[in-house]
Length: 243
Ligand code: ADP
Ligand code: MG
Image (cartoon, rainbow, N blue to C red):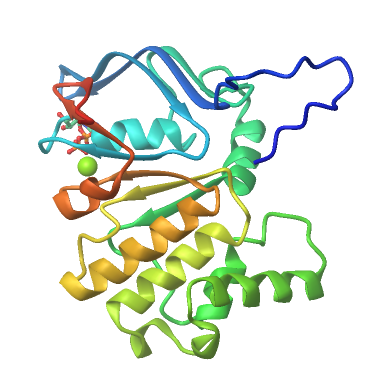
């Protein structure tokens, strides 16, 4: 990112503050389950800067997936506000949220979630379907994303013909091909052995170095150690445990 001091009407600032990507204020998410009320998140206040690499750790049932779903505009809070840029996810229309997910948010899951009957390139192309991009540009974008994850030579392979690490790289290509503002990952290395984990971790770090904001839920302390900011989520409450 470059800041210029020649913009009209903008005074040069010696200590520019990084742009804020997310702002959560008083976020509560309550589920009703068999007549019981489960408080998955209890009054979370959180700000996440653009370009950061944030991990979220914590015990099972602590609220990690709930938080990730809110950040991904897949769910709305019971109370409070979740802003991504200038959009308040709590009050935005369904169409606005759909467009947000299609354009701005990339998702990566523990189980890769690739379509087994489609090639790597076709899986990546899926993410461009909701965007109005001309056919030939789409093919270019897909090839570029597969190159970014080091899989240009495997474009025509189906998931069953790829290793776990390679499948996760296809999933990452599918997440970044839309050029999102943020990549949300739920246990991205959870199904991988150590060497493949390191390979995926290096790729994620590289993408973060290129400016992509990364937010990952992880049980893997090797992943958390690489983060710039570490959060812990337990009993619906977020604590910053960055040292
Ligand atoms: P984590 O991902 O940290 O394991 P979750 O966000 O999945 O935690 O869950 C937090 C709490 O909310 C848990 O008590 C869980 O049982 C409950 N919960 C999560 N999703 C639902 C749901 N769809 N319906 C009812 N309860 C839920
Ligand atoms: Mg979870």
